[in-house]
Length: 473
Ligand code: BG6
Image 1 (cartoon, helix red, strand yellow):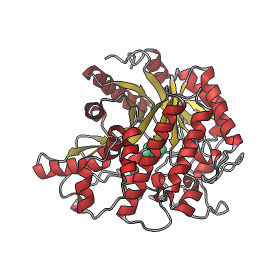
Image 2 (cartoon, rainbow, N blue to C red):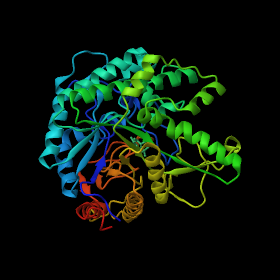
Image 3 (spheres, rainbow, N blue to C red):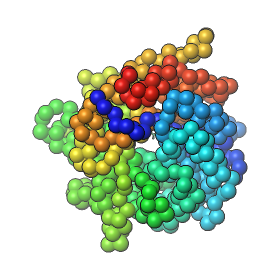
Image 4 (cartoon, protein in one colour):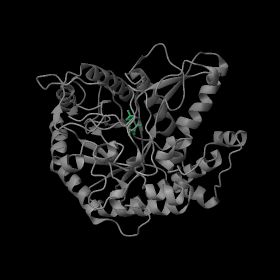
């Protein structure tokens, strides 16, 4: 198994899940700042509050793990593990607090200058997500998010501000995190639709506008620095037919096309795929796509393809009537009896990663990066201050083996950034106890704890993996 020289080993976080300092130095509130905590153990879901009520409720993003004040210490730990790259996002509302301003907030820009300078000290290449569930709340409230075409311009202005400011510090960019969540009725993290119920046509129109915003950013970015590599990012939940019954296979193809392939096809191939026409017709969905839009999508294609990979699922023709749904799966599949599940019900499938890498590479023939992968688990902090997370090591080992095999298959895989490389708050539930990190952070689900950092057993293991370029597992 052979990871290429220069393979980008690293880790990934998102601003809203680690930074905290939610209203510090001029920062405005993003949609994520309106999320209360939920809990897997008590089965409560995250509430999304239009009015933030800190007197009565706890909002995990407001402090998170306080990366804002710990970034030097955290980046030093990433460097100790040997990271070549650090995937992070910029908190849109640090730069444009409401989203529709014309002048950026200098304190926000300065913070990321400091973060990038700190990375540079250790030779760590930043990989920056421009929008990772951090849409300014104001844009959702006052404009209905991306349903309003003006928001495309606000996003472009934000992206151009970043490109110009950091053109000599950042080379790798991603326009939107998990853009395909925009195909779901509850896709507000992407499109900012939360004021009322929206029709499916409105939902797809907003997603279309997100595509346009992404394309405009790609075009502008390449003009500012032709060396930029600007990519797409999808939540990839690989789908298998539950049985070999042709109806199951056909349903799998149709769901996979719409939920997994569609957004990547638009962003990487520059046009709407043929199968969406049928879906739109059958579901009475109307999206306005002008000739100018088509030209823009064609011009603004991405340079590389990235995705998150946590689980796979099974699809059956009679999906709606079945009660064996696989847990935690936003795309709604049924369970696979051959796979184990995480404590949160996610089906763990290392071999599926090799399958997925081959599937994506044969479709797009673009360099690929796995920019999220990992095991959300309960960790035990022992009396002597160690965290023996062998289950996490085992999870990563199996996935890295399969990535190596995919590379041997001929796939151009250029990087791997495991999710939540330092414990942070869960996007799905807001819990701290769903831990992904190589680094433990002393903080609990209610916001108690010293915020002190401790390397876990997996920290030392991953360090060896990077040192040996994937040879020593
Ligand atoms: C992806 C997101 O959906 O999965 C991350 O890009 C998120 O923001 C990660 O944290 C894991 O999901 P969760 O719900 O366990 O935090």
